[in-house]
Amino acid sequence: MNCIKELLAARKLPELLEFADGTKVTADRWEERRLEMLDILRREEYGYAPPAPAYVRSEVIQAPKADYANKATVSYLNLTVPTDKGEFTFPIAQVVPTKRPESGKVPTFVLINFRPELPDKYFPVEDIVDAGCAVIRIYYNDVAFDGQDNFAGGIASHFDRSKYTWGKIGMWAWAASRAFDYLESVDWADLSRVAVIGHSRLGKTALWCAANDTRFAMACVNNSGCSGDAITRDKKGERVAQITKNFPFWFCDNYRKYCNNEYGMPFEQHFLVACVCPRKVAIGCALDDEWADPESQYLSACAASPAWELVGKTGIIHPDRLPVPGDFFHSGDVAYHLRAGAHFLSTEDWRHYLTLI
Ligand code: GTR
Image (cartoon, rainbow, N blue to C red; front, side, top):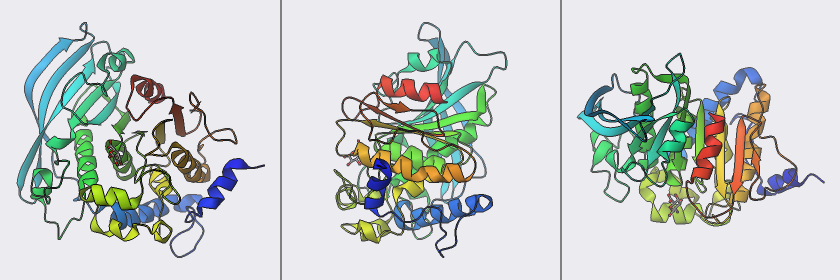
């Protein structure tokens, strides 16, 4: 029996390795296909974002200070970017391990988080610096308010909606890319090992960010579920109808067309996962997170994997069965883990991501 193949066939997914005109995708044309899928996802789901700004200016607002038994240096900065309507500024926190290798450069996470506090239940600072990694933390409401404000505040108010149709997921993702712009100006970040990480709606954001911005070596996508990593067709828990009713401002207006019409979508969420190929994706799931649906997340990792195989990398390497809590499939470029417990970005999840960066 070929268990996973059968489960995938039942979802009747649109072809990953076929161009919209039906032509088969070959290894040398993978990038072309990736850009085609990104365009579909921008048009139908997340909206179009402005291009990268001409500059990112940084200003220290709280000078570097040793903390966490002096294992980390913590500072706070403002990042400022030009927009269509003047400059826009948002704060970041920066945590750099005091002990660094001879090169002085360390792998770095860009964490888009729900709260500005440090430490935070989703931000285990000591575990991260003990693993030799740095973090740039963005507090998402500093970029765009997570609520219905008719795009009147934050970065949204700096661009015309007739020009850019982006929803809030797109805005938070765009800000994470600005953090990468800033990293290009520091001497301590290993730019070949920068991961973007987020949980839940911010897991969707991390995945969308890495799909668009090829400078990120890895996306750590924690419990992202609906409109993130999970296959939408026949998904359990949250569906397009609920997410677009409760959070219409996360997406572009087109996405609403697919309420109760998932089979009409000319795309699926494994397209989004595959847009990170040939770089790494780490998908983290929780057993009790039925709203996200770990099975649909796993199937998505499996369905996206042929992209990596096409270009000579490895997709998810897994047994031919559904995962059980404690499973982690980390030997391929598409990594997946399932832990016990509820919807959360736990230190246990972080430990997986820290081994993968
Ligand atoms: C839920 C939402 C999910 C997920 C979650 C979160 O209410 O339905 O898609 O994003 O919020 O971000 O915590």
